[in-house]
Image 1: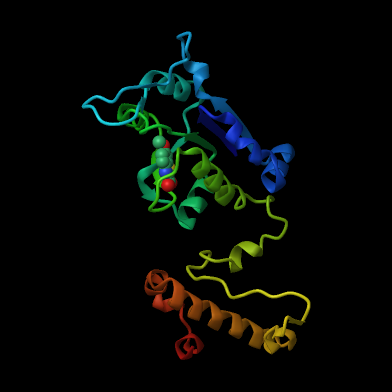
Image 2 (image 1 turned 90 degrees about the vertical axis):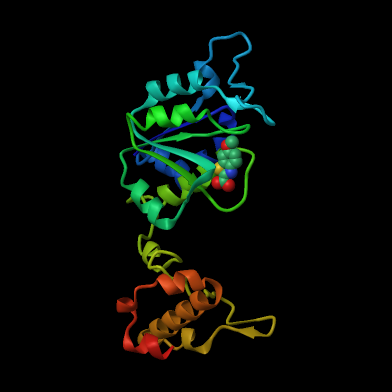
Length: 237
Ligand SMILES: COc1ccc2nc(C(=O)O)sc2c1
């Protein structure tokens, strides 16, 4: 997968040199290039913003540097993190993991001139996405989150692909609690069933815990869970 990230703060992305994303880059599974938007400015001050038409606080990112940057690195699937974007979900991560070329545009200030996004949409798929109902300083942190969510789904990046099937949101439910040694810790014991060796009962316990946790913590997810995927034992949980 090829990924281009465009930002006025390219140093924000040094974490993408680390851990499994860093390994994916060195192994060639991920071809990631981070660009400084100011590369595509032409004035001595390398200006990327200007005052908003219609007045109002703050500054807006000018269209010219962005249009030249996107012309240089595109076309691809353009992702623009934004407070007005569609909530980003695990399903979106799976869709983006299937793309050949992702381009991330990191907004700052009050955002990017809307014409940049409208113009790009005439040449490539564009997704404006939000991480949640809160506002960040800019798109950079959202891109790091999305890059983690997407890259870990790429074949060969995670050592054990089985992790992807049991984890939260993978099957539309929250995962069961996990435990490791010691069996007793500060007077708290690991649930006996997990030490029973009875894999059938362990699987049932985990499924029940997953259903209960989802019902308690994410009733929205629980309500959306397809009834057809609930078996008879589930209905007793
Ligand atoms: C100006 O660019 C921004 C500003 C805030 C912001 N907040 C996001 C979020 O997903 O919460 S993405 C994003 C982009």
